[in-house]
Image (tube, rainbow, N blue to C red; front, side, top):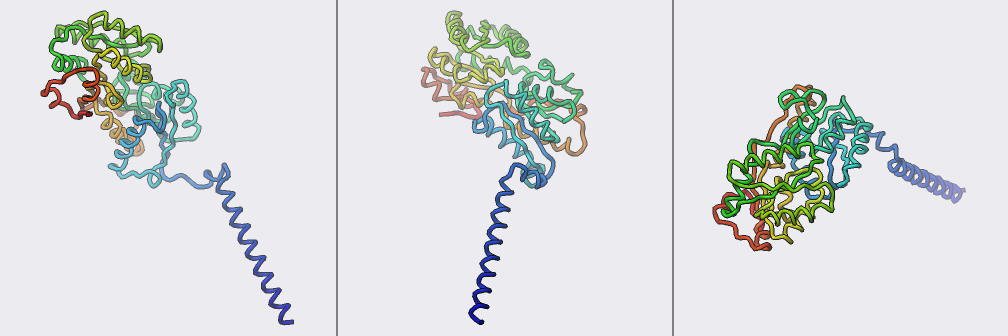
Length: 344
């Protein structure tokens, strides 16, 4: 009788263990199910981030580092105070409208973007969810806002256009190469701000006594011909007027510049890190960090229509000395001394 009781007790314990194991397995499977995430409420407001690059790209990582730093300065930590939904264009502009629509469907409270194409995609996807952009060349020309002082609608942010940047870039080129007389300007008419930027460059060049040769690109096959035209026009340097198209094909531009032994002036430091020669323009890290301040204001009740578009306040000169040596250029010491960053 005692033996039967012991066996019965052990059998009961075995069943209990099996039941506990099954319950654990079921709980684990539930966490893997598609609806499991929805069962756990998000932490804090939901912010959507829409970027044109791939998530592993240097520019995307730099943007996120700066934006998160800005959020931390204001007391927001991701997954504690706010939840961030990420969408990427992977370098393909045609993917941006779909990615923007996904963010709208996920019911984010704010969308943060970088550059003109994703900002425009977000604006076309919603006229109610607040949008904060950074790194847009000309928000008015690109039909994002009515004016810088009074954006109107549901979108505002930070422009990358500062006062007389075209003139300062030309001055830096002439300081680096005093004998220069002709400069080529690589541009694309597909960019809404492209013609304006070209006109600014031409006007600044005229004041400095320089000749500008406009070389236009509309498709990938145009780049080689553009560089040949620059050389035929006796250009001593080339200014790349930034657009979504030239950004996408920056590696091709850098490759052809090295082949042509032609010094290039870009507007953005990331192109110099990638192998370009020189850049002068806004600190994009600063612009991206400041986007968090717009997010904070909107979360506290401000309307995008009432928040003026801000212009850059911090600028930087970046020189790639390694690239200069590869194409046989010598940079005057006083120009190097002015650089905020020198890549060796």
